[in-house]
Length: 480
Ligand code: LLP
Image (cartoon, rainbow, N blue to C red; front, side):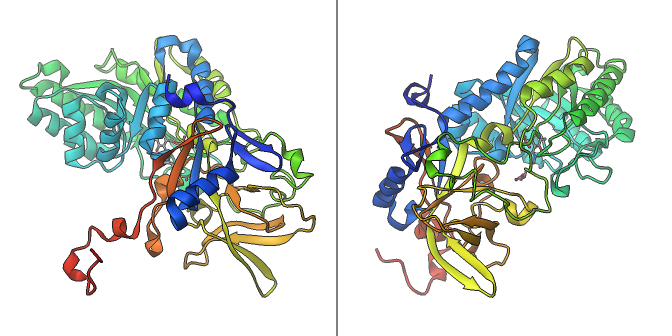
């Protein structure tokens, strides 16, 4: 059991005395302590709850329980690749890591996953990445005809056996933002069904030409993988996926790979837009689930717009009847494991009006939360401390980045009192952060108990940002 597991007293977000607490720790106290420690680099800050991470893992583990050892939960590192968080997830029972780059493989290894517990996926794997994966015994998803050729030639050259799944594109559309759908007819991901035969031939040719390893096992085709997209609210779509996967698995078994038994159904479950907050009534009806979150401007995107997202249990129950009895089922969620565990706490820089628009300018920006600009995604915002004032007005909450697309949440009714938290920032926020406008990557903390937190990523400094540029390019040397 990790330190965080032993120490956390209550998990989740809760208003006490009008102030938001994480696992019992006051966010105002946290804010002060970070300001003392880091000065202006103490805000904005990613705040994660260790308790919520564990609860999210438990939901998947419970869901997969009927499959016993044939059910495997793999975490998609791209959602958040902070090593502390990855280790928390592993300690809580995540069995494998899904990666999409050589560096993600290295990170998974550093966090204690064994090579055989790592899946390497991607439509554009580079030779060094494939070589490393094969050398170490990582499971690879073959994504295309060229990917199959490259894998066979690398395995041959290394004389090493490669364990693989076929990443299929069965053309299943889902209701999500177009950028988040990955199995449309024109998507860049996966092998279209008409090309499966060709890929199988390439893999079979490897059987006949193995040198150091025996001819029959240069490529070990273990099964199939389908990931249809992200922020998916329809369980029915997964039924289609399971049917397509089972059919192709049978085909593979009957065509020279009888031992293939793995079905990886990818990730993709959406999350509720709003995190349940205990004690919202302390805000006298002005808490995060009333005024401030009411009527956020209509978004063109449905990427997170679900009140009751399907649970992992519902997902598994829906697909189970369509899987072969002996099949090993892998689920590899990202968002639904980590999104609700994290918020961004951000201070108000100022309030201004232009035309008939009122703006609250905060110190977080699209550099920490790109999702509203990129997908029109909705991240709700709540007070750190509920204001005493009753009157509210409509504001757009925006960041300081030099882009009109730099908004956090538009059209919210609130009183611009203290600091805010931006909800559901545990997934695809830190990992998609950028240094645009030379803004540093911000501090990240994990709340481990009602009294304590760990800094799990120090804030970048100006020196961190410039140290990769050659000193002679600067006219003014750094003070020594
Ligand atoms: N498996 C594969 C093969 C994937 O490509 C992905 C995500 C996952 C699993 C995990 O999906 P999740 O459970 O997190 O939905 N940046 C976007 C999300 C891109 C997801 C890419 N692939 C966002 O901010 O919404």
